[in-house]
Image (cartoon, rainbow, N blue to C red; front, side):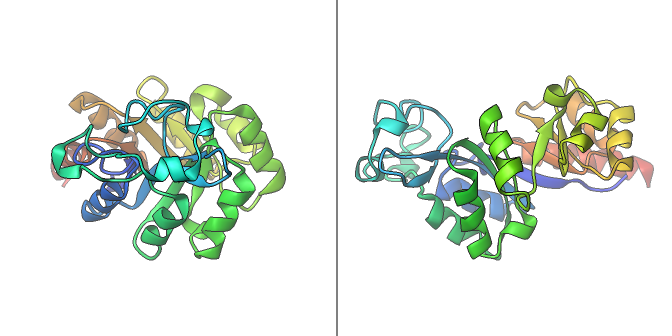
Length: 240
């Protein structure tokens, strides 16, 4: 067994407000291999790091993100909801977020609503593309990414494709499992087919992490980084 690479889901989201510069810095401080973040487009066509369709949950504003201009978004407080010490944290513009990633951490760009070619070009201009990958729950965006930016590495979900064979046929580079789809056989099959294996898990059950370690998942897209490392260390020590 080998140590998995850590992908911080929405940054270090257990210790800082998700999808902010603070959560990015937290992910880097944790020694993560990559940061996962979400991308949306403002009404006036500026790209931002934001998960939800509305700003209600993670800022002091309200309304649909796509209905807001960049001037309005830049005024939002994206930190106070998480803790008073993060008051004044802003919704990051994608440009600034990627600038802060350069030379420090790899990037997993989940596109909620944005032109994948624009995202790809912003990564490429900063020499981040080689270590970057992308995914979208929007089928149209996934198809557009395959067609227009074939050099942008793509991830697929096992729950979407249903088989390793289908992931390969789609030209995927990374196959992501969750706690319901991960099995040792599927993980081994994916590796044999040349796919990088990843697991998403937003919870903190030790048994789930133990399964991931025993299956040999290569990348963990998670929130509870410290707990995973504890479980992993215990299992690797048993092997030694």
